[in-house]
Image 1 (cartoon, rainbow, N blue to C red):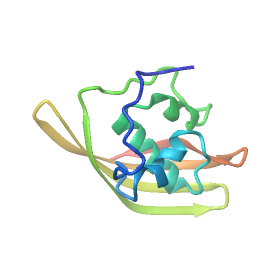
Image 2 (cartoon, rainbow, N blue to C red; image 1 turned 90 degrees about the vertical axis):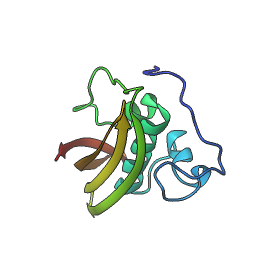
Image 3 (cartoon, rainbow, N blue to C red; image 1 turned 180 degrees about the vertical axis):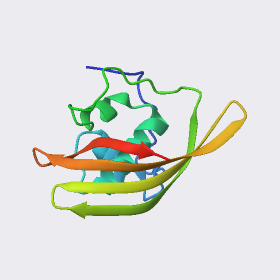
Length: 132
């Protein structure tokens, strides 16, 4: 099931949009379906999904109980950077606090979120978040 246009993926040797490493060693494998080793890595891959327009990855990694029926990626938004402020895991639950910078049509801003994750079937999934 496809939820968006074909993603514009970086080359494997290009810097990863999440800022952690090169794409082929960072978010690339996760976007291809490799399970995230931590909630923070999953959150980073989800940020990268917004950068490259990969709605399918967002759907796959969203808890079915809280996943929306439609995902609308804002084609006009340009995501410019990610800062992870905190990542806490406790068994099968986790919280990741982050800030993501964006610009659109001459405006710019920062999305701040406290995201909640759970491990489901051995894989981390996004549950929900508080935007602040």
